[in-house]
Structure formats: C-alpha cells, structure tokens
Image (cartoon, rainbow, N blue to C red):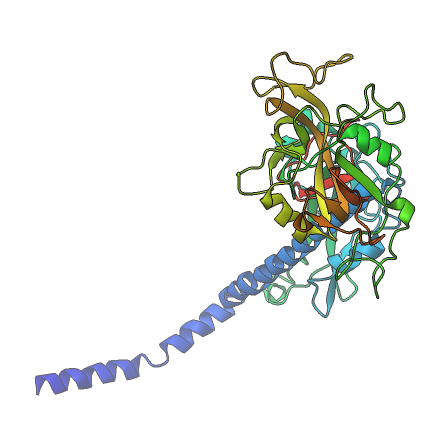
Length: 443
C-alpha cells in the first residue's frame, strides 16, 4: 500500500507542475531570451555559412586570377577578368543571393582585385596590393591575412593577387537578420558578409618529374626562340588531344620539335650551327637522364636551383620505357639545366661562372657528374625513340614517322605554357622561366 500511495503522490505532483514549463517559456519569450537564442543560432549561424561559402568563392577566384596573370600579363586586368571569375564566385550562391566581386570599393581597388607586381612585371589597370591598406579598403570588408613568410624576404619577388568578395542578397550587399530584428529595442543590425583570398605564382620549386629526363637551357632557348615560340593550345580530351571534335587543331609540322637526348659521335670541333652542342649536349657518359627517386621508377624529386646526379646509359631504363608509353600524346614536365659539373661529390650553391667553368672537375666523369636544374618546361610528347626496340619508340602523332633513327635517342613534340603541381614556388630570376608555373594559395 505504501508503494501505491507513493505512486499516487508522484502523479499528483506532476499534475500540479503541469503549467510550469509553459509559464517559464512565456516569461523567457516575453523577456526576449528565446528570440535572442534564435538570433544567435539562426542569424549568426547563417552568417558563418554565408562566410564559408563566400571564402570558398574568393579562394577559387584568386587561384583562377593568378593563373590568368601567370599565362599572360596583359590579361591580368580587373576590367576584363570579372567575366571569367564570376562563375567561380557565384558557384556556391543560393537562389536569392550571389557572391560577387566588389565593384569600385575604393579609388585604389577596382572590382575587388589587386596584385603585387615585383620589378619587371606590369599589369594594366591593376592596383598594387601595397596601396590597398586600412585607409583604402572600407572597414566592413574582410582583410586578407598577413603576407606569409615565404612571400617575404627572399620571396619578395614572387607576385601574388588578392580578391575581395562580398555577398549580394536580393540586390543588396546587406544580409538581413531573420530573428535579431525582433529583439526588444528595435531591429537587429544588418550584416555585410565579405571575404578575401590571396594566391601567388612563379617557377615551380620542389616537385616530382613525370620522367627523369632533362634538357639544357641552351636547347630550350634555341627551340623556343628565347621563350617566344609556343603552341598556344593545350591538348583536350581523348588521344592525341588535337585534331578531333572539340579539340584544338593539330599544330603544323614546322611547330614540331625534336629533342636529341644524345648525338652519337658528335663532330670535333662542335658544329658551329649548333652552339648548344657539348659532347652530344651532355657530359661524357650522360645521355639526358637524371637519377630517379628509386631504381625501379622513372620519376625524380627535383628542386629548382639545385643539383641532381646524372644517370648513365644511352638507352632508357625499362621503367622509363613504361612511363613514356603511358605519357605518349600527353604533356610531360621536363627539368631544364643550365650547367653540368663533374665532381666527386654533390655540388652546392649556384653554378660556377666563367668560360669553361661548367663541365669542369678533375678526376670526375660518367656517374660523377651533376646537372644544375634552373627550372621546368611543359612539353607535349608527340613521339619518341629512347632505345633500340619497338617497346622504346612511338611514331609522331603529327607526321606518322619516328622522330629519329639509328642510335640517336630523341623526343618529339612542342612546348606549351601551363601550370605544374609543386609544393613550393621558386623566386623568379632571369634564367628560370621556361613557360611553366605553379600557383599556390597564400592566405
């Protein structure tokens, strides 16, 4: 019976408390606590969702703008680029708002873009980011984070762009509050959501090469007429990437280049018409190959402005034959060297200067030789012959013939401009721009 009485008593207490929750909720509602909590969770939450979407837009736009500027300085123009950037800016926008490039936010920053332009670069109509300070950018805009350490000091010559974006909501840049306007004391403060992103570009720094083959900067200069002659269109779609539906036209036969990795029995003295010719363009025992990262591979981790050991042999390794077969009709990345140094140990520092300084080093030769890598080039591989059998050769997709015969070893194709994946950017210098560039986010 005691148990029954206790249970009845509990039920009676519950009936007496029945209206307490409703009363408490009414008090909190009247006091604005519930509305305040809704304002925090909904309005502030909506602000951060909007901010995240806007930051994604700014990040994508800054990387795209950096690529545009890297490919062609004259296209790095805030009066032109919004048309190509707006699809990226608006990709995350909802049905009633569109993330947009800022338009004429200050006299010094037109259409939300600015650039750092080190000596030697010029971008039309593009304000310098150094001029976009606290007085130039309106206080409601998000500022970009501080310039990272790798873009200061030795990296001060690396160019970058900044993109400032702001939300448009039903034709207004103000994001209206949903619940905070119902708080006691009047409507809540309207919010303007903005973001900033920075991207830098320059010669690739540390990266892994497609194949462990290298060419001389002298050859590259000769073949590209000092960096002025490229095939402007990259391959698109199915093999060979040119000449098909929706693909760029196949380059003319005169645009195809043959890179001789080694010339057997070069004339002595060298042919005066081939001023790059130094023992077949390579050191004795070297035929254009560098030591791979692992013996069973054909890739090499190479740092720009550093030294890499040569790999002996006239024929490509089995790993390189396999790698080239998979890269036939594609763009490969070739490291470009500006010095060969015979040495008993790995050299350090920049290449030696003076006549005959490169190729120097008593008592060294063969495997005791090193290339100094100055930079990288993009090369469409149209054909090759790197050995003496069918597995080591492919006819040119342009001519239908092998690009070289006999004991000559060669690649055929054309140089193109484009980006390369790398983990760092090397500070630009007059001798390390071979048409390839790396774009990285920088805040």
